[in-house]
Image 1 (cartoon, rainbow, N blue to C red):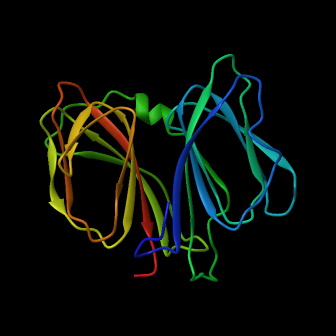
Image 2 (image 1 turned 135 degrees about the horizontal axis):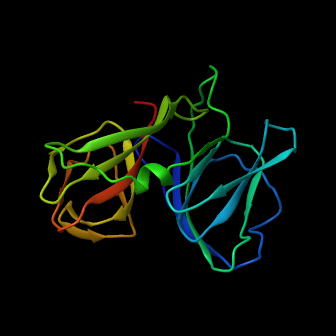
Length: 212
């Protein structure tokens, strides 16, 4: 939790919701948010239009996630018989963009996560979401699949990147990372990744293209 070179504040936390429970009454806040399922199942709930207070349910499994613009009413409920675990990113900026922005968007990523990927010479990337938000020039969320031994070279991005690592064992920024994990690369920090395990590695990235 803290400021980045691109954003006034970035916060990441995880929550565990017991079976049969609501997280909280539908609420709003000034931050934009992405909430992603990492274990169990739950209904991610958001109003169909900003200010309508008409709530829509999106059944979610690991890999599925939802983007909430600032002040868009939302909550989630665990209707299953097992705990539900989510990872949440919330951010705010001292700049805003007045052009048309993304509405609340649910991404059903689990089917893509489960697809068998054929061996490839390079990393396979599937893009889930891309668009302008109130605080970002662009938010983009690709999923990457690395076969055993595959890697991508160290490089620098002009934006912050969060990675939710779901499968496999990789090496990055001097660390060995196994699933499930969260990795955060600040803008301007050189980073690469290599699959050092003997199974496919899969992760979903969130790129926060801020003011620079």
